[in-house]
Length: 470
View 1: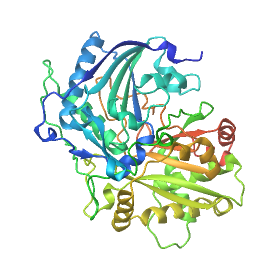
View 2 (view 1 turned 30 degrees about the horizontal axis):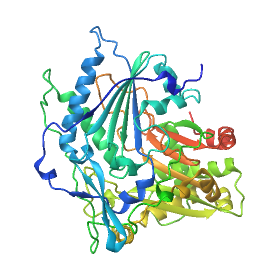
View 3 (view 1 turned 45 degrees about the vertical axis):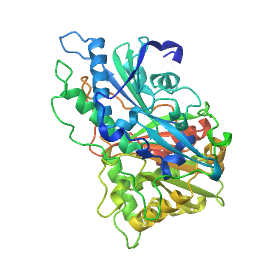
View 4 (view 1 turned 90 degrees about the horizontal axis):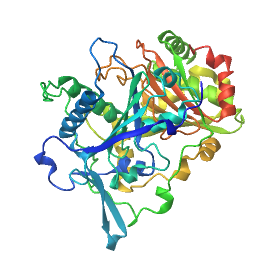
């Protein structure tokens, strides 16, 4: 297979999509302020998720124009429910305080962005292979795939964008969303709504059913926290919004673990944990422990040094009563577990899984509210320098994102089940691991791993790790 690059992607058309109707409740300015975790993500990249489909094999002739028209109407209807996504960020400056705050103006800007492109020299099988030869072109299947676009750019760029790319024998739908207004749960909530609307449209492009899950825009504010949260500067310093690109030397690979392999890992972790008085080790904790250990082996990390595992935890379910997954926003908190490398390698899977389990379990409602309060009372933005490949390697960091609970292969846009649901090119970094549900379901997992080339080779040669990979 020859190497593929962005020169093979041809832009055909582009436009902006507005909500189908005006929504009265969103006419009031400053309905949605960026708070806490929203602000932290301003220096990071947009979220990107793609859907790879084979071209329909039915007898009737497929019309790309009809499909595009239906997608545009679906997006317009979706924006009626997700009205803030049609807007842009606005910064308010407080000169006397040397501070600023940011909010979403749903009525600012031309709306969501929609792109139609073509890459007819690229096949579905080539993209599905996820070969290093096709990775450069995948970034061109998403809006904002170019270097340096960050969430702060939501002041002038769309907060959500869809790109439909025609392939030699299929279709790629790339969806991009600003990570300072939504987390992964909310991204998938939007995707599922878009699919539901798409399938409800009649021949006149009218919705025939009501949306089953309405997004809730009601941010969590602990007692004593203002809905307007101010950053301690009039303008974000350049060090916070410096445009950085993904390290071009990174190697990426997807490792597939069958449901049987997941069950074996979970059984092993629970059998090795000893008489620790805690609940069952979960599948996620077992897999995360397995990967954390293996990456440190592959890195040949010094035994006397420490290594950190980062887990992005969705805290909706940790309240009593739990928040619905319909709650839209950035509702994740970082869970950090730091241990010595020799402890990981010597104590094994069960012990490492217990470390993750205990730390995650300790984050109950009271702990979460305390963390949120601390973040919201002193808002900050993560600096790009804190998440470079060099800094991550220095910390021997392994970070976990994504969720196996997302129904990734459920969205239907008229092509049947997706062949693959790849991530885009954003926020790739050494030691980043994205966990997704496997295509065949049943508890199988796809693990997308980003590492330096020599570390990836070591991981692929690690028999203990690869024994669970199919």
